[in-house]
Image (cartoon, rainbow, N blue to C red; front, side, top):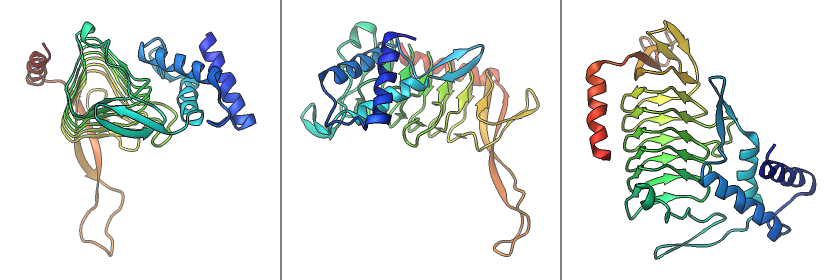
Length: 278
């Protein structure tokens, strides 16, 4: 266990046994939390990691994020000419230009404790929450939200108006994972700890959540909570177990996700998208 991890867990134990709060947290506690946020931003600490091919949530990291809301009082924060009220300020973006990362003005919000990779692009308005990790070469398009602790891989494209759910709103046991080289179509929603495998292409307006089955036509399996690597996925509606009902005539249907092999035409389209990032 690292020193930072042990320090965070010690603070968490105090919170649970002594009702640690902003009123009693002092400079030492806040210094530990600042060091924790710095480690999130530089990528040395992450909310989840891959072990033996499976993603594992780092519970102590979620504790550290929650402690920042427990131990900090709401204060006036400053962003350009706007004052707002929060317990966390925004992440400094001074390091981005030297690493080739761009963020457009008037609405790109990166909260303190978010990691942003090199050669990435963040289009306004977009929001990246505390604990999120955005990989190198990734495009966050207009009106995108990357929720708390979400892990977005390298060379990912999130289409406009995409929502990546977080672990704090509502509280979930594991963050959303989008692995490397994934293309997510406009208007998609990925929530509740769903894992998108490497190299997938997600059709527009697709909802990926563990409550909706993924009918994988490649493995001929039904998956919940994950999409295997190298799949093209899109929404279809399948017949529900609800049959004839007094409230309506005919059959009832429920949403599902269908996953197939990635076609060559789909791959060529995503390659053209890459030109926009250069």
